[in-house]
Image (cartoon, rainbow, N blue to C red; front, side, top):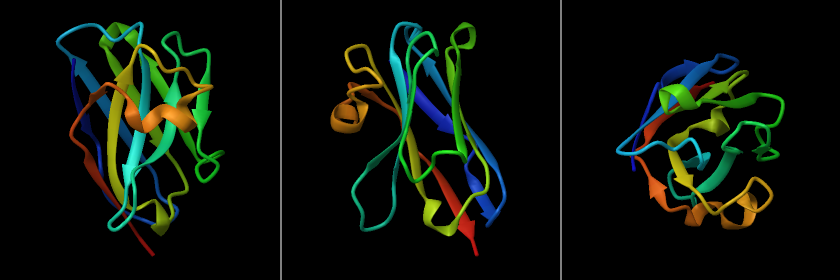
Length: 126
């Protein structure tokens, strides 16, 4: 599975961005998909995850109510709608896929997901 994230950029605080993660190589319709971020000098952290049917989601406390994860299995793509962005959201955002992890275990196991894509930079100015 190859994953490619896109949609990052520079935005002012309070603004919005929509990230996309396109999968190729094989269908990821049966995989949990997740978004992660890593800021300079910090460890990678889980941002959000969505089950393969989209019926279950997970959000880090820091993004609840501002970010929305969704997926389109027909397009083999997962999205992250980010609203009301804050300077502390500045990071490289990456997507990942795994058939074993669930939204219930994502907080603990998410950083060990099987397939990873290159990230996209999100910069939020104050």
